[in-house]
Length: 161
Image (cartoon, rainbow, N blue to C red; front, side, top):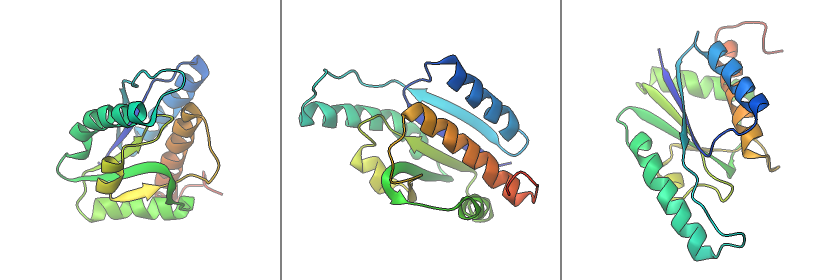
């Protein structure tokens, strides 16, 4: 069974987001071993300088590296400049990961300032959900739903219409 790690910067604050994440986590248990890792968000001033932002991204990258450097892991950096995939193509990509010997797929979600360039450069895929901007809490739930949908597509169920 493939392992899916959702590595995120920050926590889900509102109960309704946590409830939604818990529901998809429960559903995904039939298809994969899911772990949601919430990394600490770097504290920044109200109007941070580029240097402060770069330092925060570097600090967050250090925390992500313990997951991205796992042998046998396929790393997907979630970023707006990434490639957009249909649900069917995401399903195919996850299936290919397993067929190509990857035991783990890491989805990396950065802070509101994004993901450090070094993490993006090491990613096997840069993925974007849309050109639009979404709150990080909603993006996490949308990603969990799409991963669930991808497994449902592979299983040929009626969930995906």
